[in-house]
Length: 111
Image (cartoon, rainbow, N blue to C red; front, side):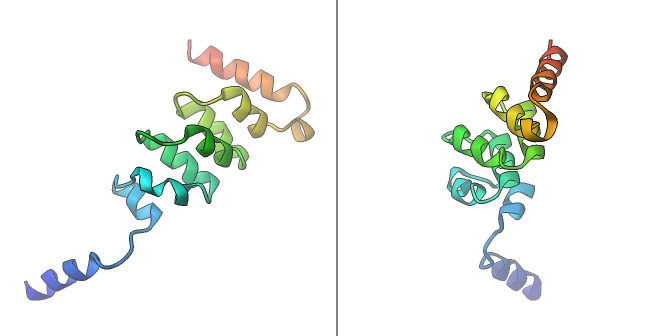
């Protein structure tokens, strides 16, 4: 048991990564700055719905990635869906109306 106890004690000295905290439901508001370094992390932190989180800042970062923008719009309460869909379906790639069609479709599914 001495080796196991030593291993447990040593593991407490290792810095916890964002993914480790996410996988083990350990994310806190203190992790927001780290989350704002990557679109996917911003989405995941917003999804945790941690009180005090800056949803607008997390949304802005998440929307740098079209896939994260799409899921942010669908999964995060209080998300600016129009903003997210404009980034998920940029006009220069999909034309001026694609994001509007997708947004309308999404809203019709929630009814």
